[in-house]
Length: 220
Image (cartoon, rainbow, N blue to C red; front, top):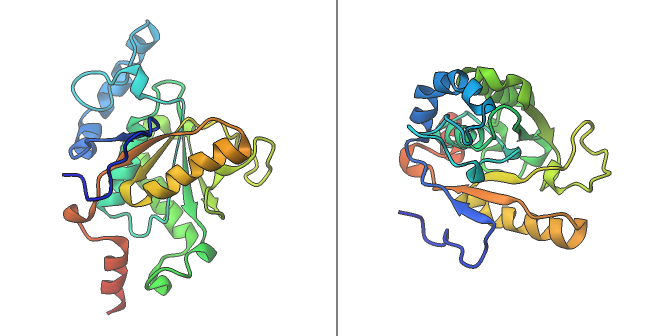
């Protein structure tokens, strides 16, 4: 079941994902993605990455972003990244992964137990490299130093050199959905650019410990 408060009505930009077996499916179908590339080029639409049949092209996006602390790469992190990959259009779609800088994490519980940025980024890249090696040229991992990251920057901004704010989807957990909706309002009202499709996952705690719980254990 979805957690209390996760449901959002009247917002066409929010999509709740039923994603319990996504992690296993993407692993078992990773080879199928490579084998079916020629079929994609010949006119078939959709991605073979998730599930036994192709995901409709309307559920895939050309420029997907996802962000987080990625402290410890627990189940929730792996699920979030897996769903982000599965939401990218095959062949030409791109994925940006933002990892929060150390100075933005000082307010978190047991902040002294959070690994440094370089270590956390290395963990993300190792997981992504093992999960989707064929996508390495279409995935970029960058440090983020503000609340919204690259999708909250003006089109002409140089805050994140080499990145263009052409994103059309953001993968996030239900815990951060309010921030995603706030970002969309900022994009529309302040930046004058279209809102993102918010692809929201269910809570992850029933399947494993949160980052805070893991840091609490490490500090004991």
